[in-house]
Length: 72
Image (cartoon, rainbow, N blue to C red):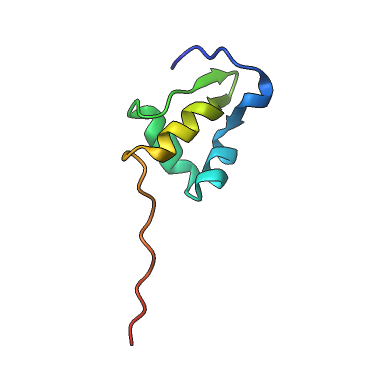
């Protein structure tokens, strides 16, 4: 885990991060465990800096799920 120097308005929870990136909480947790997404634990809650989340979304580490192909 990484120490975060940010105001509370610049921090998001894992659930909020998953909603912003349109992915699952499990994928966010996996990125944190792999060290691809820095987070800080406050009690039982993991907090992620908004800037780190934006950088992660723009990186190749996050590709998201490809759209389903329509079968004709």
